[in-house]
Length: 166
Image 1 (tube, rainbow, N blue to C red):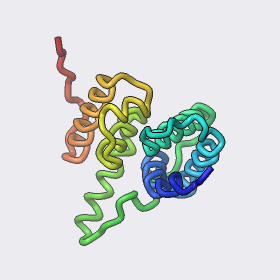
Image 2: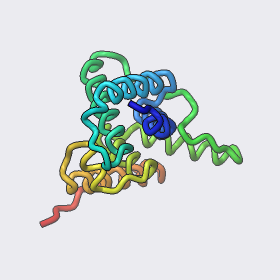
Image 3: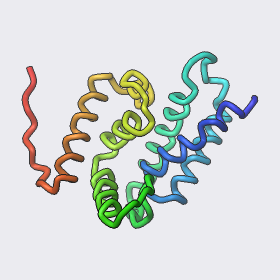
């Protein structure tokens, strides 16, 4: 197997892993576990399909397995520098910290969808495949994530009622 196609995606995998788990060391472990599984299961990747989406699917599955296995452990520390480290002013740093806290407060399902669409720029269809959920679920989770982020960053209570859609 030629590892070059996978190697090209490592920076994106690291960024997504860091955003998922919040700590650099755990993210590196997640990427390593993902790469190991991807190399072992590379024969399952369909040539011509989107390798990036396939790798995110592998990472998602590894992450879910790790979360299931670690339910009794204390939540990972969120004290490290956020994924996006661009600080022009102290105000920017505070705003970035607020966004990072709001992102970490999202349920994992909403955070994954938001990161895959907003940061990794996958399409709804690709995210649907990566997470093995219907496209409507992707859209619903994204909508809820955006609303919770908006409320959290604006400093309002997250008590916005859900609308009934018929």
